[in-house]
Length: 90
Image 1: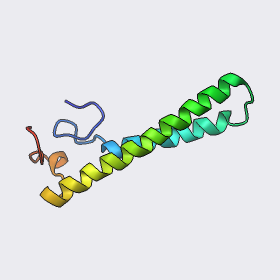
Image 2: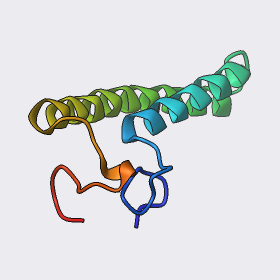
Image 3: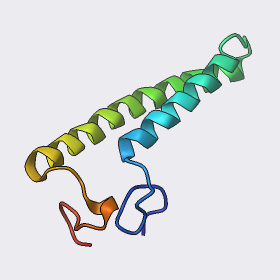
Image 4: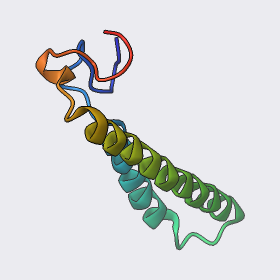
């Protein structure tokens, strides 16, 4: 059973790309709070966060591409409505 992602066992879950977008949004808010801190540690953390956000941007694009691929080939997901998964096993 998935804890966060939408599935037949978790119909109230989130799509992967939506979770990544929410995490990136939170990180942007966090970065804004430390952006003017001149200390080396703050700069280091900010640099790491920017790198993480870039990776999240790539992950969002990949997750969206997977969703488009599944939507195009199999139609919209019905797992949340109790239907069978589009790929894999239930």
